[in-house]
Image 1 (spheres, protein in one colour):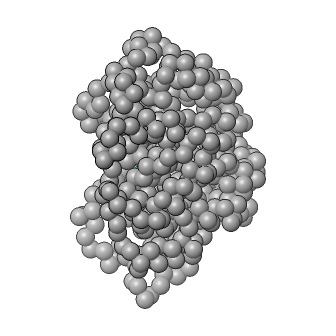
Image 2 (cartoon, rainbow, N blue to C red):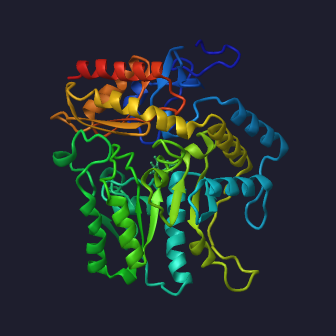
Image 3 (cartoon, rainbow, N blue to C red):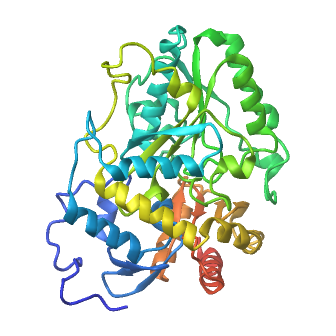
Length: 448
Ligand SMILES: Cc1ncc(COP(=O)(O)O)c(C=O)c1O
């Protein structure tokens, strides 16, 4: 699709200052020598600045689950902007925030029925951790100040999120972080589980790490345990069979709140509305973002169990119950986008669609086994991780070379370390799947 001439698209030739922007999670100097610009998006495709159509194999960044440029979402944002641009969320309300909270709660398993809005996954995580700490204090167990995360976990980039997170590069430059944090071991055991179809057989016992940490620190010091049900950013690690159930049981036994970070697993990615539904394990708090607004306006949320919420609703009614919130919590444009997005998901039955497409998707992903460098394939719903053997002279280099070559051939994928992570919009058709996997397989054959 050619780039519209009525609003000139930025290209590397008419952007003459690449220097000012410090790009996030990007090799800035390398990018600026050979920039990659996206200037438009529609359905399953981006348009690059040079006019090329780029198949989106990553739903942007795990967020555009309903596909790009959905007219009802665009319209809802435009209408809301014209009606009321902004409303203060502290001591004031606007209808769309209440409506979206109620709609979101209705999508959740029973008991998860109170919604706190944020603007990102990182803010959702920090909010959930703070609610967990304040909950225990509110019920007279203020000694529960310890937070448990997991190695290789990704929970965004706030200080709370990197403290409980376990991706080393995201942590090691940033000082001491939160003091009372410990980590479960990660569940990646390629020697036992490589190329598992469905959930890995081995590793449920790794959940017993939580009991070990209870023995070490005392349950009375532990507020919450946070995990991604499927660890995404570390390379798509599926939970071993029985692992999440075991974590749930230990949390119940020890009075520890269980937090699922569903920032990427939410809104149909796993072929069910949420990972909670896919795995049949319900936490006490859930963090979401990304697919909540189809990526169209920044927004996140924490959905909280009634018993946790109700623990705050005591004392004089004129007092603020939780000293926490953001200027843009429940922003009108985000709420409008969220409501329209939930309509699109329901009308197009996209969560069910992801489930129906999943067997073919998993077959296509696992068919990459045997290609050069592929040392593991992990797939579920409409997500897949293809792990490559690292190059001798630098971890991550081989997957990044695959990313560049895929982009040169018109396909956007995401890489993390040496894993290629695929997470297309849930509107993907067979022809797109063919193109995605054929391109990837051709590229794998060309890599050094
Ligand atoms: C599981 C998880 N939590 C939190 C985040 C952070 O979200 P954000 O980048 O919106 O802050 C991400 C982002 O990818 C994520 O995958």
